[in-house]
Length: 121
Image (cartoon, rainbow, N blue to C red; front, side):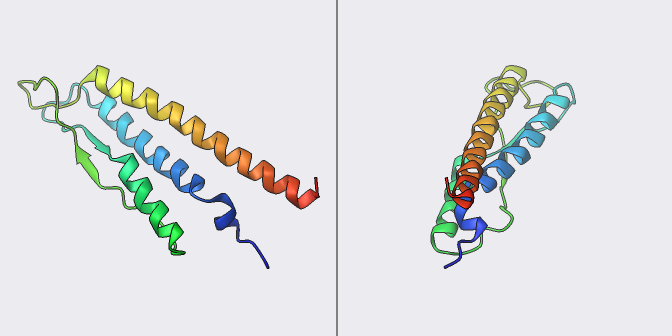
């Protein structure tokens, strides 16, 4: 019985892809920290990943994840309508970068395990 690569790698490629999308979104927020009226956006990573995991468990194809981009509510609103808070965005970006590295490590371990199984070690 053949094992599909998608089943072998599990959720890890999807998690990595979602982390990359979130990185771009957070970088956009940081780039627009001084843009009047700019609304900070983010994705609810946990809920999108849970939805993807449920689809994979049912045997369905997760395909491209549609991560809804949510607007962030600021802790201290600014007069120009910009909702980007530098410290919040920097923290979210750093956490996402660490989580990206973790997802990459998990994917790497899966691939290494498959390689060892193929080589018979």
